[in-house]
Image (cartoon, rainbow, N blue to C red; front, side, top):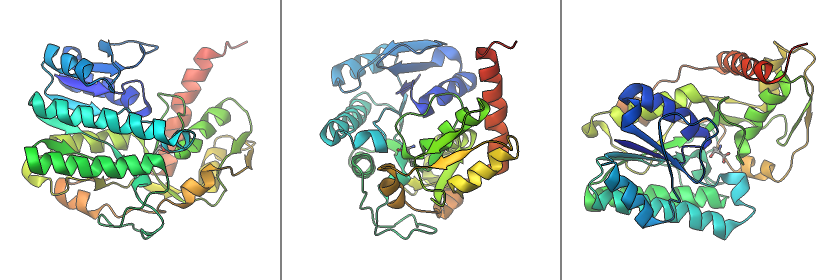
Length: 316
Ligand code: VAH
């Protein structure tokens, strides 16, 4: 069976149904601190900072794969660095140790472009760039990458990882990420509201539509083990755009949509990240290729959110 830790998070919310469809509802267990709003399939309350609780779940459900998708994201982590570090690292170490002791076959540990810092080249950031992250979240991702490599080399654990760009999706509300302006902006546009963007209009960032992120995750996890040459974390690219470019794309649907740019503390976080990513190693090793560009993502997001909001807002 497959255990998804952090099933209520942005990736978890979208990945759970995808895994259930692929492997069957009874082969996938979602786990998080609270019950989901719309439970579907097997779900267990879990505080992944408690190793014995995690071990008990792994034993009870005879878990063979773990997707560890629980973490405090970049912006939110800066409000309480030690709390964010402790939560991100304790859960990670519990997942690796329980996986080793209970012979879990495969483990997915997400990393992020937040692992890169000021000394990585900003354009076409290479797989082997130096990692001096500016946020606690980024530091915890670099640590997670090195722990994953360690567990693979020392214990033979099949741990796989992707350095996700900013991910845009409609299945959950924005949750403390610096790239989450690109999610919140669609909610405002579809509701006919102006949007105050917390990044400057020319802030170019690597981004990806959720469907591409899910496909990359599944393609990586299903690749033959002898194809995996990176055991820290693979660079992964979808597209790169600025808030101004995203706004223009949305305005092809909502011509009167207004965005006001009010950069805050998250601007410095975004400025420390790459502008574009070189994901040639992922393309070579396991055939990665993105499918969504900005127009296609915009169309999808507006279509999906229009359906959701129109359902919620009574028509008169
Ligand atoms: C964040 N969405 O903003 C996450 C991600 C690259 C960004 O790590 O923190």
